[in-house]
Image (cartoon, rainbow, N blue to C red; front, top):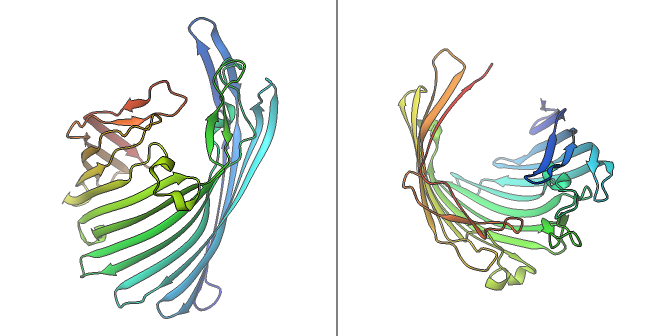
Length: 338
């Protein structure tokens, strides 16, 4: 719902309710058969509000918040019992938008975000042999500030630059040795994670017939104090420092057929043995479109066209230090809207 209560004001409100009636999981062994079986139906309620006020010509202030509530009736506990739980989270955001140049837009953003624990993280267990459930995990929280500037270079091209700083608390990670005396469990860990970075993009918006974009991003994410963000000893695993890429979307037959091509370069990622994986160059070519007069969408193409063999670091819960990513993959997708 959107309201315009007075001149220069725009208020937007929204809400959503989702009920998961069925959510079952089981753990099985080749020797012992089924070890555990759980059923965890749950519901989720979300509500948000965003208020915009025009301050003067070319400047406006946005302020709002989002509320989320999860309700679980039967969560398994570490001692083999069951417990109900509600998880609530409120996240505000403030944005100042100005136009310091005739074709430029400056955005300054302060926000709080979150990542709720998944049902898997809350409930996974194998009866205490190597892993126990932990229904008391709290959401991860993220405090972020960002400055973004968009400058129109011509009627066709835009240049966008951004700087950001993030602080992440209450991270969810696996704890424990994975033995009966000290089984593993998902839990919030103390300490802060700092991320800072810069992004640059040159693009031609899709609304003008075809779209072209070239991007580069630099980021460092590290454990501990912000002052140690550039210390290699504080770097976290599975976090590339450099990302670059380009994409182009060309209408071939109106809305019936479009060609999309993406090329992405990723620098190496640190694994848990403090070794860096090889960089990767990934290319995708996808054709997509809509059937005229019918509620059908389709796409087909090739992902990782160059068949680039690359690895990603694995988490502590997986014996392998690295996992091999998929090579050249052919895809086809058909969807209908009723």
